[in-house]
Length: 399
Image (cartoon, rainbow, N blue to C red; front, side, top):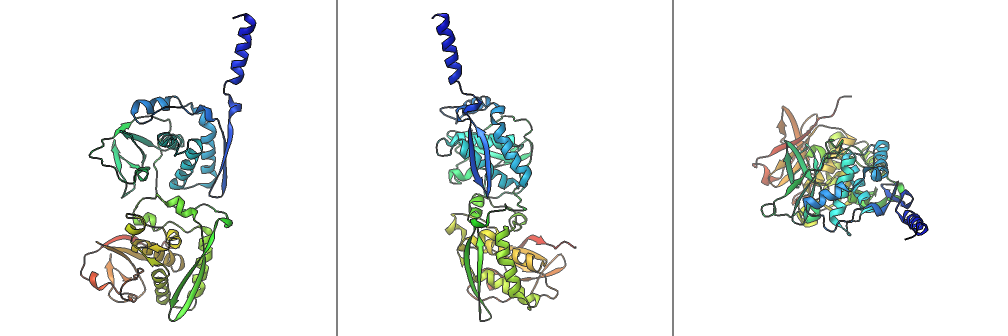
């Protein structure tokens, strides 16, 4: 090859080599906010199979951190600005990974990107493989009840993608191997606690009509609800009552319901008002066990209970708890039986036969529809001699 041809070849080769200018701007909406970053799709490692430790390690080693800085910076910028709780931030990570490497195209690669982006964001995440299974774990110190976990050096790691396998893996048959891929700074503990929800756009809400009858009077509420809540919490696991009971309502939902309830309760005594809320929670929604709706146990937050047309006793307890807390802020306990969950409220003077706990008297307020119309303070007849546990205690903070 002549010297001139060699120079021409080098010029052409350099011109077609992927550079930063090959990056495309990726934009998508997350809870009403525009997420935007530059990303070059040509840098995605094209590994044929990512189902064993060798292939996954090779994939990770081919990732240049600088190439992913714009993505990570966009995630951390959102985190700094809006202070999302960990579960909500993980939903943003999921959606980002979907934009980079769609789940339907290569599930393993999509999962690796979720792990990588969450780790780069500072969270202590782990991977484990067995055959064609790849499980993605996060360091979490809370009690999580319906998903697998692993103990590593005394720390609990709970699985974030078990639902992708139908919540059904035979761990006796499939022995998983942990893959140790250290990411600098990945030490943050993940929490399932939800303290606030995103500021959704008002246009994202639709109106749901709720009807119920109280003391021969009909009541009609037009509640604003956002289906994005269903999407955000579709894979939220079963957690302690302290966590799921206290998931707040989103702003639009709150102001479409709570002020109207307060208006309806005006002039009623506290006991009559709580009775009203008990019957609203009991009769404004259809009852259906979680096994029928979701195929297994699932505890709905108060807003999810409003969203779904059917709900069970756990869900009614959450909604009733939210309403009483927001309107009257009374002490409450969650009472669990082997096959039922209910709630009791502390009044100045108890109603019916109270449950005595730590020296305080709480009156049962059954928020779930039963065969008979239970009054305030009445317990299901079949539960009067059944042992129970107090699973959660709410004590209002003194102002």
